[in-house]
Structures are given as structure tokens and as C-alpha cells.
Length: 314
Ligand SMILES: Nc1nc2c(c(=O)[nH]1)N[C@H]1C(S)=C(S)[C@@H](COP(=O)(O)O)O[C@H]1N2
Ligand SMILES: [Mo]
Image 1: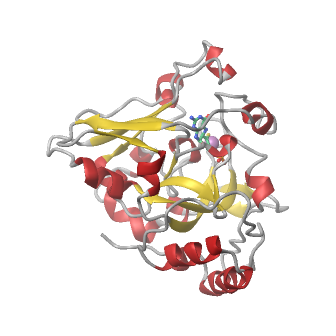
Image 2: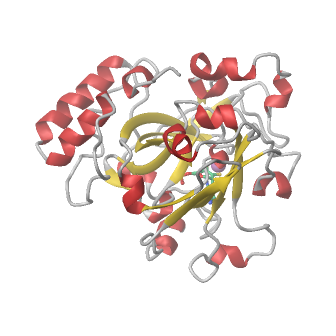
């Protein structure tokens, strides 16, 4: 499997100037970050929130203009319906969400089912990946994630040959997540990937942003990131991962099958039933950008969909 470093995802000079900044920052966490961006050295945990990595570290504007979105913006404009449908209310409502202790139960069609606690998850090498995030609602951000490839976790449980899909589930706890009292949705939030999508090197289980542990509104303590798909596939606060034979039905597919498909690959040529997907608003910018096929990751992922009807990508 091809290893995609963040240096390949971000225009080189942006990445380099970012690295220069990181070197200058001096904190221990910094070297862990640089290491994890360069290789697979184990770097134990997401950086404690005390160590400062400036949100706008080295952020130049590259050829694609992929300036990382500021830390505070990333954490104050969130889709997280378990807390609120108001993006700007999520952070406040999620503030006291308990993210420790936490376990992720990984099972289903595997040889070695295992329940991972936070310490277990920290043992995986954490890598930095700067990815574009494109929401179905036609806005986007650029987020420097920290996390482990999903493939690394799946390898430990040894999927059986019968396994064809990966199914993910968010915590169900209406006492902490008031949005789950809303009977309109079939909670908990569920998402799924084809196994080969789940094993793709771009697919990340994120534990941090800008070298700091995820905040509750971003899906702490661990969430999925699939950068070539619409944002709703990137399920937050995961407690359960199952290898399954049949295609899982996601919360959104159950809710509105004509608006939310299983694949949900970013595609400027397939409009949402109620609006065009040909352009997007990059948060923090005025004007609009053209939406890119597979959110700009076609080179890495197009081969996964060879022979598939383009309309089906939805
Ligand atoms: N559990 C859960 N995961 C979720 C959502 C949600 O409401 N609940 N919203 C999704 C949507 S629509 C998007 S665009 C992204 C937003 O991630 P962000 O708030 O970190 O930008 O999270 C996705 N993951
Ligand atoms: Mo979204």
C-alpha cells in the first residue's frame, strides 16, 4: 500500500515552512510531531494540551491554496448532531463530554477481537496528515490531523476473508448527548466503508488536531477521517468497529437515502438533490472554490472505483 506523507498532500513549500516552524517551537511534542510526519516511529500520545503549536504555524498559501484552517475555527464550527444541529453551539454543549475512560470494541468477522482502551490506542504510531475536509453542505476546511491509519488497527484484529465492510458506531449516551433524544434520527450514528477503503492508507483514525488531543466537538477521543468522501462519513467518538459481510446502513442512509449514499465520494458532477456540488466555500475565505473530484485525492483513490458507474459513487 502506498504511503502518503502529508508532504505529498500539502504543497511542498507549505509543508516545509510548517516543518521549519515546528523545529523552532522547541517543545518535546514538536519533535514527536515532526517524527511522526516523517516516518512510523512510535510517538506515544497526542500532545498534551499545554504545549503550544501555533494554529497558523507556517501556513503559507500553496498552489492549491491549502492553508490550514485556524485551530479555533476548526473547533467552533462543527457538525455533531448528538449535541446540536447548530454548528456554533456544538462546542459549548459538548464541553463537559467525558472522553476518558474510553474503549473501542473491535470485532465481528475477525480472528482476534479486541477492546482497545486509550492507552492501547496511544501505542500505535501517530502520524500527522493535513487533509481537506469537504462537507456535503458545500463548505470545506483544511485540518492537520494526528492519528493512526485504520489499517494498523485492523491488522491487529486480523479480519477474516469473509469480511467485506467495516461498520463504525458512535457512543450512545443521551444523558451526555442531548441530540440523541431527538426521535427523528435512528441513533446511534453509524457509518461504514468497504474493507478496501478502510484499509487505504489515507483512511485515518484521528486522535488529535494541530498536535493536540481532539476536543469533544471534533469527535474526541477518536474519530474517523476519510478525506476523499463527504464529511458525514467521518464518524466521531467511535466506540465500536465491526468487520461485517453485508454493507452497513449508515444513520444518514436510513434517514434520507435519496440524499446520502453509501459511497459519498466527493464529486463535483453529481449534485445533491437540493443543491450543486460543483463549488464550495472554504471556511475563512470569501468567494468560492471549485470542488475537486474525490476532494483532490483522485490519484490516490480512483483505482478503488474502477469499473463503477460514476453516478453510483454517490
Ligand atoms: N457522530 C457523528 N459524527 C459526525 C457527525 C455527527 O453529527 N455525528 N457529523 C458529520 C459531518 S456532516 C461532518 S461535515 C463532520 C464534521 O467534522 P468537524 O465538526 O470536525 O468539522 O463530522 C461528521 N461526523
Ligand atoms: Mo457534513
